[in-house]
Image (cartoon, rainbow over all chains, first blue to last red):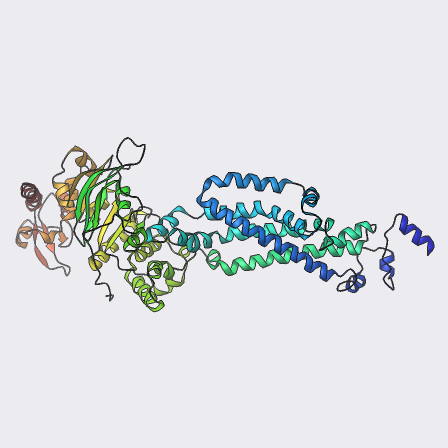
Length: 247
Length: 338
């Protein structure tokens, strides 16, 4: 046993000794289901990490969407804004995530703000570009008819352009959410939150497979679930987009 | 056939209207003056770049005029709220511009909704209009993408008619439709117009369509100048200059014949055709052009005219067709000298 412990301390996985440790864990097999269920709502507490992860993502995408949406609506009317906003968005988007977190810590310190600011900045370009593209793609004939029929500019935006932009806007949200779910794992580098925490822990503990895989798979499942949610949302919001076409 | 189509129509007057764009050397519309009596179709026609669409769009202030005045029902459009004005004017464009995210019924109800009608009144009106344009009621719950081009165009007309506007603007409404469907839509529209009697400004580049649809035709040339404004008959009988003559075409004589039905002219007795031997027959509702065409394939002999039941009502001869053309020209002379 002491030989094993020494070996583990030097090179192998540092398997946490929570009470009885199964042979699956000590052998660091690919995935130990029992260990995972034991750690679902206690100890590692995947459930809590998952909820933290959802919170990080929802806040980032929601805030990013509000900012990008307002900018896109403004830029739709004032086209000169498109260049500067796109440039700024691309700049934020290109900064490597780890670097972004590091830089921000020096300004905002080690807290949730830092994480959210970084995550929001990654959503801006995607959400701005898609919202603007959706608004711009509305046929000029439709807008002309709306104007000629007596809709005000605000009514044209709210009743015609935005509803017609919904599919493109949701496409942007899908990309943004999936991106943020994956990026949010890196956030654990700053604050011990989300599914990134067990991933970093597993890496530090010498590649504890089960913990590593469990966190990763949860991330993937979360992304798939969020994506499906948006597909469903789009079906509900745009029944006109899925009707059978004549001729 | 449909209640509530008693309808209102308002006269429209262009009074010395000009439109100049900044930095443009020439005017887009140059001192345009003409009057459309209530309930008539005025076709604006001319080569591309003549400003016909611009002139039309000045009426509902999609474009604002530079000088002059436009009066609807003797009231100026200057200084009116553009949205209020537009809600009182039907608007139909070439590519229809139906709202893809709204059902047909909701598309038709756009203006009534803006005007704050209650739900029942909007639904009743949508049903009524679907009947009027000859679409089955179940189409009301479909989306525009599920309709054919011709059906969409009809819905565009219904949408424009929804709040019973006294004036309609139609910009090449049948321009994007295939020739066969276009002819059917034109005929349907003429039948509809006989029923609703709206004042209509109709823009087209097609002189044949102008002759067919217009009670009056305004021929414009580049620079937005009005060259001639008259009834189709008079324009064909007496084009004011070479530009108009070339624009209406060398076959304007035939076009005039196509405007007159056989039962609108004096006929010889049926015995005239019978006396000429085995004669061809022609329906009294056919045009003089049809009659001439039949004659040409029959050695120019007189034709026996029959009514819808096949009973002879008289004979038409080449002399009578000639007489009809001469009378048009005489009408024109008295009209222009008065």
